[in-house]
Length: 380
Picture 1 (cartoon, rainbow, N blue to C red):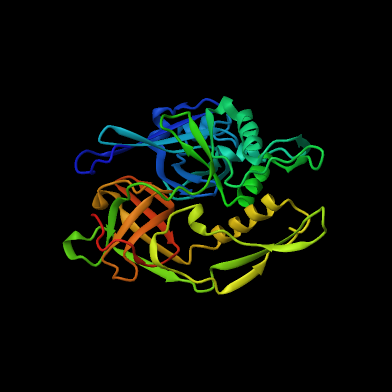
Picture 2: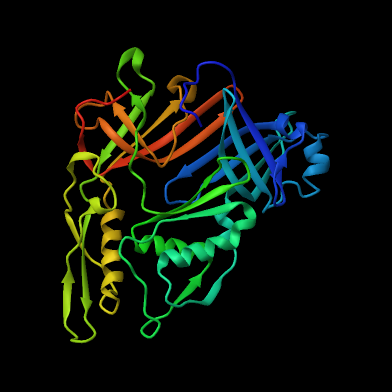
């Protein structure tokens, strides 16, 4: 979406549904939509929930619901349009439906819950699929390519530490579902895996790589600044036990001598956002690394550092019209008005969009590794 303020014109929500190819829903369905909630988070599966008015003699209750229109695995695409610019919030499938019948007229509802298209990667267990002489990134690329019919295109970043196994020493096999295996490979390398819907309905980008904490921050979240405030409240927490220092021991096969590997700095994966990173108060031994290759063990150590790095978290809620923009997850945003300790840049970890007739709010969570901003001022 273009980075323009929301000053004039309505915010419109477009709903598309279908078995595999989603098309605009009938007018009766869009008119019956009461609310929509979409949650998008970094490194996690995104989800949605839609609530409809279930009129006794309406099209949904008499034709569409018994005909399977809202059955599980039905594809759903939600697009929000602000001042003529569309943004795809969700491309997923229904996994559950609930019907609430009331004696009061107009109180019966149909609620459908779903998740993004990665749920399709989690339906079939695969055992014993070999990947000879293929590094993790190549395996992920091959798995994602199987879902191209859903408009999914891969964006796979090669692992930071090369890990191409020699077939004479080891052949890697897949265990579990495609999604579980791809997530395991991401976790072992300090990476994340998620689907980013859009830029047009029906297409998604499957991202496998490090959390991208680069680029210009979004318009600042301002609190406690009188008329300049655009967020009602922000809550921050500093967890001193969050960060861990991993210890990884490997054994060299030729000499049978074991050694502790030095753990690389976290800044290799992502830049620092705070002047005072939280110290690692806890030390943790990474299990089952002695028989692994040094590259594998080093990648796991780096992943453990990245996993526990965010000791400072924040949460809040904003009104989209008051804020003036759509807060985007998986990007940076500035915070001002919270004081020297907590002002500065943060990574937007998750955003939940709550859309109803006449309202559009966002709940969000922020994260970074420590306290005090790197820059003296925060750009509005």
